[in-house]
Amino acid sequence: MRLTDFFGGFTRQIFSVFGCGGKTSLVWALAASTAGSKTLVTTTTNMQGPEQSGTLFDYFFDEAASRDIHPSKGVAFAGNRKTSGTSISSFTLPALERIIPLFDNVFIEADGSRAKPLKAWADYEPVVTESTTVSVGILPLWPLGKAVSEEIVHRLPLFTVLTGAREGDAIACGHYVPLISGRAADGLDRGGGFGGAAYPLFHAAKGLKILFFNQIEDEAGIEAARRITAMLPRGFRDRLSSVIAGSVRENRVILL
Image 1 (cartoon, rainbow, N blue to C red):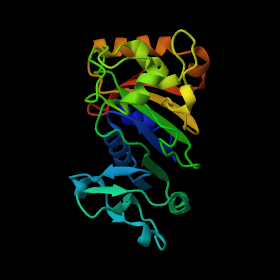
Image 2 (cartoon, helix red, strand yellow; image 1 turned 180 degrees about the vertical axis):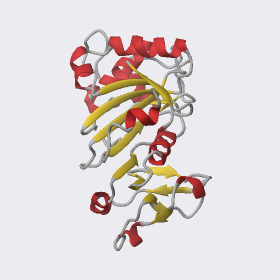
Image 3 (cartoon, rainbow, N blue to C red; image 1 turned 90 degrees about the vertical axis):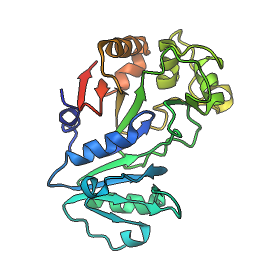
């Protein structure tokens, strides 16, 4: 099915998107599918501003302007501009929570990964608002078979703690299981383990939880996604609303 058709079933929601490999692309794709609504795109951390701003959003406002904002139909992009570059930073969380109810649909980039395809999480990330109704954890699978390294993994020391992998090991499906669930395939609970240093993908999630394997455009990727999904602990899997695999770029997903 089309990605936007799948997410179209979750209308009038507050989405927080976290993980690696397509957060920004997903947020803008979903915002573009909400024609006729008052839609907000923002971040609780930092977010790169789009190059094609004229087509992706209709107006921008910062935290100072948000005190008197009266949203109109269309896509609003909100954040505090940095002194250099095109990225924005988050409003304070109280300011963000105050304006969220003014919009019909809200899409929040709630995490950062320094443009790397994998990471593990510290206790303060992702930053998920209390009002979030749908949490989307996103991961690519193309790192399978690549060596665990600083080039592939953000927060490498936390990743090795959480997954049991060592630097230089080939990334395997089994490493994704604790990364997603906090529990290894052998049943060992690794979530927040070893002094609470490393946390899994969904540890801060709120509302409905959707696991999205992104950047998958061939059958081999789909089979890897199915294999990892089957390895997830049953109790954790049952707490997920949906598991999907596909491609934001191709606007295509399947349900697993």
